[in-house]
Length: 154
Image (cartoon, rainbow, N blue to C red; front, side, top):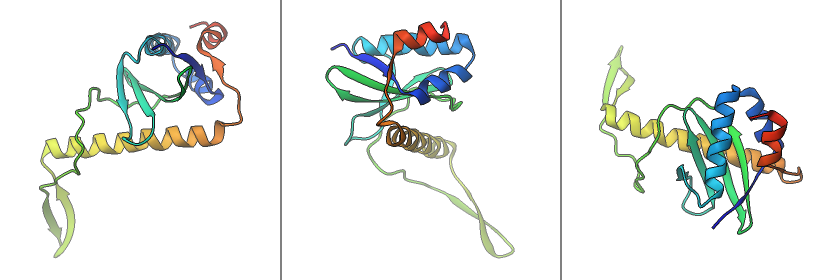
């Protein structure tokens, strides 16, 4: 299935802030996405069609509006990890609690659990950003990706 990629004004604004070579990589990845959802894509929830496409240190947050269109918002967040492993269970933690002056002060986690918690928080931030952009941008018209590329020369 192919999709028409359209960007909300927030996405275009975010692309303007990104170095041209990175913005071009993101636009290339969005074009690949249009051709059958290819790329480092992660569904953010099991219940709604909300996704994240990772391109290097950047993320394109999007949702599928209908069979003919795709709405995309790009967010330059600087997240460093790619290729999350999907787990549908809660994070099990084996924390060691350290005390200071007789009171619990710190929790020390095994590194793998720390990474898992960090990944879950990044996914939550992605979902929050996508929903905020969607809620503020419903009445705002989208711009086709090819037009954005032409305007930004990427």
